[in-house]
Image (cartoon, rainbow, N blue to C red; front, side):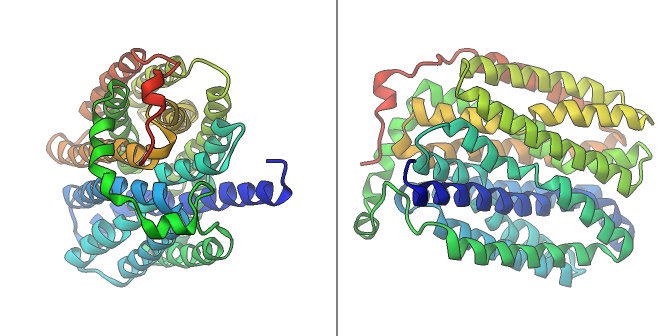
Amino acid sequence: MANPSLKHRSYLIIGLSFVALALTFSTRAALGLVMPVLEQELGWTRSFTSGAAAVALLVMAVIAPFGGRLVDKQGARAILLIGLAALAAGCFLIAATANPLAFFLAFSGIAAVGFGLVATHVVSTAVEQEMTHNKGLATGIATSGSTGGQFVFVPLLALLISTYDWRMAFVALGLGTLFIMACVHRWFPRHAPSVSPTEVSAGSQTNVWKDLARILKLPTFQILFWSYFICGYTTSGVIETHFLPYAAFCGFGPVPSATAYGLLSAINLVGMILAGWLTDRVNRPLLLGGIYLIRGFTFVILINVGASFETLIFFSILFGLVDYSTVPVTASLVATHIGKGVMGLAFGLISSGHQVGAALGAYFGGVLYDVYAQYDWVWWSSVWLAVFAGILVFLISDKPAAKAAQLTSA
């Protein structure tokens, strides 16, 4: 990192990754923001819109390992460009349609490809490939765009919806995505530092099944996979999809709801950077397990929000600290316990579990709301699942086994 050009490139990777994730996750959050509007304007049910979110998460789950594998071999630039192009196309198509099937294909198909490729596991792997020091902190900053950037974007989207309509919000997202796509094309390195163009063209893809078999046999992988599955249920699933509709259900308008969600996202920025900083300094399984246990407690607060905006804000602050703060810690454990050379594939598989868990949370949250006209069952399930994930992670040793640490992609 003494070379100024390498240091400059590292800053570009962190900054561009932050903004790309901010746009991607804001687009996902936009569905929750416009969900009540779509129901009123177009007559769609909560089950339909929740189902669209769930299918998008499943598409992300399928794509995640492939994107991760390509990052291992070629670096993140090409994967991010493809993902951003799909995201922009999906946003413009969503803004242009009132047909439920077209909306479903645009959000849950085309845009979901972008969600799956412009993702935290891709960015985390890119940072691990580039950085030599303070990897946890760098990963925390880069991936904090997944929530921190929404502090600005989500309230702006709410303002566009209130001033114009929900279509204008998706047009703005599409235009922003095209801009950051041009920046990635211009400044992101063409290949991972550890991958030469010759190696890319040779493409040792034939060992993917061998790598996969070795990864799946590791107990640490299984623990991280299932804890991240629960992480998906309790974050992207129930909060990203249902927090804003739940706030509306409690009687809060679009702007106060979006403000609370934006605050949650801003605190998330602090939480992820703090978790990344701590990852370089403390026992990582204890840190990760503690994050899950605190998250479980926050859902008890959410159940008791009622009509109190102060309680909603308190939840947003506390949950924000432990929302996506699992990402830098999990990424670090993947790199050290499974292997940097196969980190993209391994973290992609783990991220698939995250998206499947999120899909369950998103879909059943909508179904339970349609059946019971309340969210209590969803919040209580999140309490106990988060506690279980915390206990599960405590089984991991902070120091990796020598054999596991040597896993590399042949």
